[in-house]
Image (cartoon, rainbow, N blue to C red; front, side, top):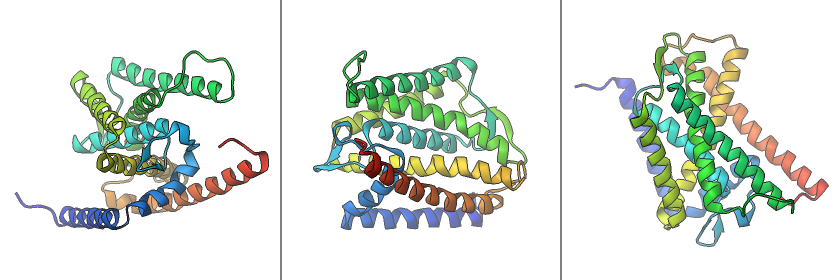
Length: 264
């Protein structure tokens, strides 16, 4: 079966990007993590005691944020691998409820962790493994639930089908998140490095998604996209906005930290 020219071009671009990424990672592994610190600084407290380390270096995202944004990346990847990019329906109600429960567990664990940080009474001793697990559940839920809203907003001919159809796919998604979490906890440098980069990709992916939706609405281009090419303008604009947001949040956080002597 022949491949459409645009698909071949996209595959070549993806292969070139991956080649550059792996060469850079091999020659200067700290470069990507150093750049990732700026991304992480915009969305994560980066407290060393709540983070994982690679060869003595703190990762750009804490344990909870690593799980969250790696979960988003995993959920997005699952949608694309299953070719559900135009699906606009949520998973069946029981599965959606469990996804929302994961968000609730993330919020509860985060509250308990912050109570401990500020020396207030809390329910149980926080632990990075719990932070990672709660973050992963939250990220899988966010990625799965945000995607249908995106598809509904941008596509002219969406599909009235769920992005997650049943228990088998839900179980596979949980298994993928569980394996990734286990690999992080195992701490083997090559996989830890890769998963750290994928978690940063999850940050960029969710920012790009949300900002693309905002741009599409502001430009009144809802439901007009036939192909990915039709999203070039709003997605390109959203990429610039996302970069500006990261820079702006970095500056704001730095100012707040220096002005009010915050612990993070």
